[in-house]
Length: 219
Image (cartoon, rainbow, N blue to C red; front, side, top):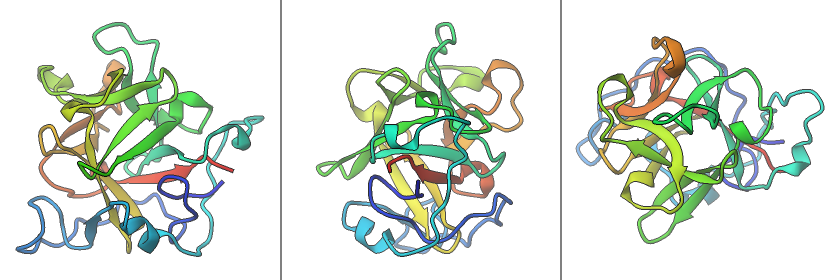
């Protein structure tokens, strides 16, 4: 099992889980909040990122079969706490399907997401394999749950669109919601049922809270 975006082969290097320093200020032609070294990943960029490198191994639960997953399915690991994002399908409303970086290993569909590229909008939609729902940004939620990511949509619109950024030198990924223009953050300091929740709430990629590692779950 290798670490890539979509079904292509390995991205560059094995990643350490220590938090890297924040990047330099954005240049004049770079979107606000995107430090130097971060580039938006579109279909053409995949060929550049795709390269021969040491394969990253995903820590599957004992007995789990890697070959059972489709090649385009990814696991998303938070750099801040080293845990994998899971879809909380058993949570009661209104938080059913909320995404939390809380799994120590990839145990199955709860930690599996299909990244679907849309050529027209040049964005990605994330579909949870746990409930076959698309991940939406809950902009209308209030308080600490505002902009939380939740796998709850049966179709894709503005609430379900993300721009994916990659930093080649760090071998890190970041997600930006097109709904509110904010970057996805792992809420490491939260407590209770929303501890480690993913929320689109940062105005910039400032460090490990907005940085993720992607694992390909294909053969």
